[in-house]
Length: 176
Image 1 (cartoon, rainbow, N blue to C red):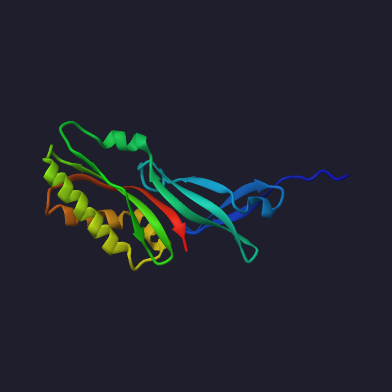
Image 2: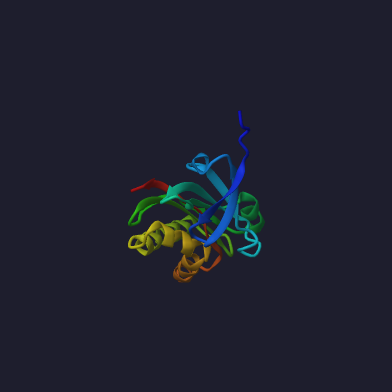
């Protein structure tokens, strides 16, 4: 009876075009496994992680992103005194999936509830309009590169100036 040894198999992560190695007996064992990828060094100190699910495509192992998340410890660091925190959660339909998006906004000073509601509604409207014609990979790419956040911050600045404008969580709810 031969003893089976574990080997390292290459898995290509689709957003960063990087390859990681995972340990398993055979490639079929890796299929369906969830992998967390820390983005802190890539994003210069922004404590984030991306979650991937491994799929087998034509004999190659590919990691498909299904969640981007900013860690709560980083968010706690951002919150100062005498500011208002605005959070929301909503579903967005993109070409190939339904995404749960949770924006996180911090104003420079305390503001009235009406201003917070106006910022929340405007952010929701803008994000839904922005992502409706894109596929999920491009939405994740733009979220990681912070281009969506920059556009959103510029748009919301007209309502009230923000100290922080982030997408706290972008998650695939239902893939088509």
